[in-house]
View 1 (cartoon, rainbow, N blue to C red):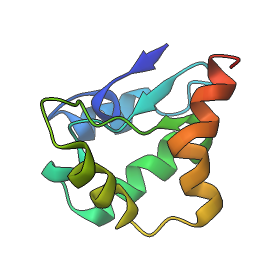
View 2: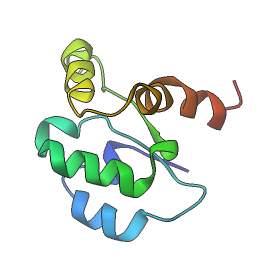
View 3: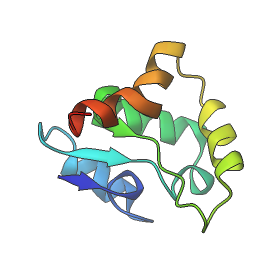
View 4: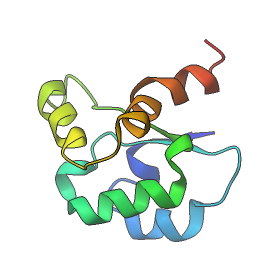
Length: 95
């Protein structure tokens, strides 16, 4: 299952509490990063698991360049960025 918006738009604390730990759950980070602190975003992504998160920007609703820059500002390593930006999606969908 894939859950958009880090598991629950504007209900991130609930999603963090109720949805983490499910092996088959994947989350995208669309429509989330602009509405929480960097610290909260990093904590939630790590709690779901770097290997279970996808980058999503909800284009054309949000500017994809700004969303991408916002994501990069979180300070994940090159390998973690690569996983979230491409590899996790490809692995999950067997591409």
